[in-house]
Length: 429
Image (cartoon, rainbow, N blue to C red; front, side, top):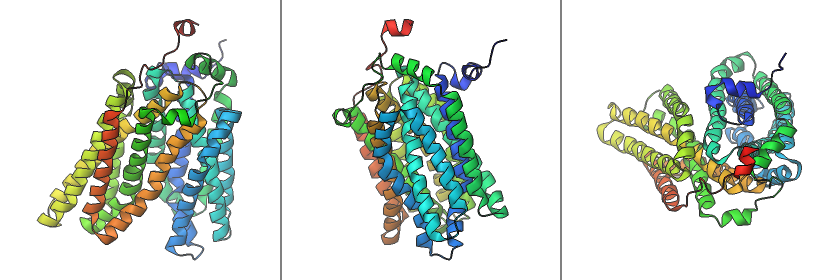
């Protein structure tokens, strides 16, 4: 009787057809991580407030974890280079699971703040090593779709998690921490069982043309215009899409358009649906028509989406809050930014994969991840300050200008697809 092997899953699923089995495994892991965090995220500030702290102190629990994750990324890259992505990935998942369990058992605010800070260490270990592994086992004409599949796992989990989170928080404010720890435990088991060390070596040798143990240095990568463009795009995407948009769009809906908060939720849902539909087609464009074309589409979408959002606030002032023009432009902007997110969720990572070329590039990938984290940290602060000092249209306008800067960088970058390919002998083997 033939034993079941993980590559059977890939052969049966059209989504992962012609992709390495590791891509499917990493996508499943990202789903479990995202669904657990989606359940936990709404509970964190509420749980922190239960200790009688201020809103600022409650917010520090979230930003503290993000700061720790940002600061630890270079070390995570070095650890991945030294011990291998597979070990650091599993270790990171286990560390986040244990610290999340401890955070749920916290009896004081300081205990919660401490354990969430340690969680950031494990989170950086997982994200850096997972992306490094994903790119190391994927051939050049697979990297766009591989990154899309990986992002798809996060997207599906991120959408599904909050749907259950509200019910779980109503039952117990501590329960989401335990559920998150459980989902991460499942993810770590999947990692250790299905990421075969022997098979990883075979894939890495094939993709790297026998140079799997060689390292791509950050200095060498920084000399590459394509890598610099990917850093700019990743920073702007984190600043605008994840930082600015998430932090002030809900306020724009309730204070600017004077509509119910549910309208913001529907807008984010629309963006997520559009992104989910276009993720794999966007990855295919990056793999067949070039990274630069996919990045141009994504950057144009991000710029146009922010311009439309700026117009939504300007025209809302002109026509009044009773007009449907503001809400209509808001939904149009969310749809356009969903398109942008699909292309910018895969193409920049594919560029980095081309530059690393299957070699160990933990530091290169960690730096790439850090630019997005930095954008997510600075975006909400800048957006909030602009809204307080000026208005929503100024904040959205700054986002549009930054998006335009990213578009210029992408327009001038060299193409990286087909820069390197495995030798014919390696492919035959």
